[in-house]
Amino acid sequence: MALSFSAVTLFLGLILFITLAVAFFVSYFISMPLVKLTKNIDEISKGNLDVVLERSEIYEINDLTDSLDRVMASLKLAITKVGVRKEEIFQDAVKAKEEAEAKYEILLKKIDGWIWEVDEKGTCIKCSSKITNTLGYSPKQIIGKEIFRFLPPQDANKFKDIIYVMSQSKTD
Image (cartoon, rainbow, N blue to C red; front, side, top):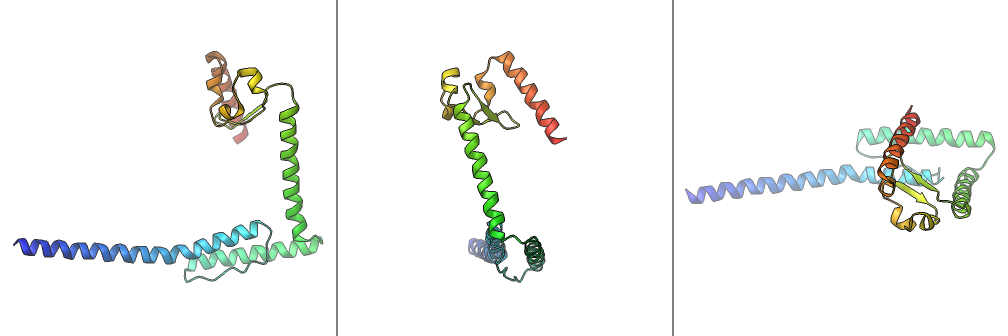
């Protein structure tokens, strides 16, 4: 009886091992086209509209690939009709973003008070270096923390209410 129990256990273990091996094999071949498509989409988002999207054995991925091909063809046509090179579009967008960020950093340094930026949960995303003079904390100590921690309780509650109202109006 002990021999048959160990044989059954061995047989079930073998079935489990084979099932897991087949599952990993199948999931690998399903995920590889998705990984390639994701890399292609990253290239497209960087301005390379000449990316060749590979076909797959998976119907749904082929549908997505066909849709992306049509979007890229439409975008190329629109760019051609406007008479702008695609590089100019992406370069101008990146340049404008970098200029805005540089101006924001200059503003943070020049204003003679404490300036901070918080997300909808009240977590500090950015703050000026003047915070050290105001609160005695460095920006590194504040960024990533809820701003309410650094305020007196009555002010913290008022500020929470203000952020809540602002986040609600932002979503409306």
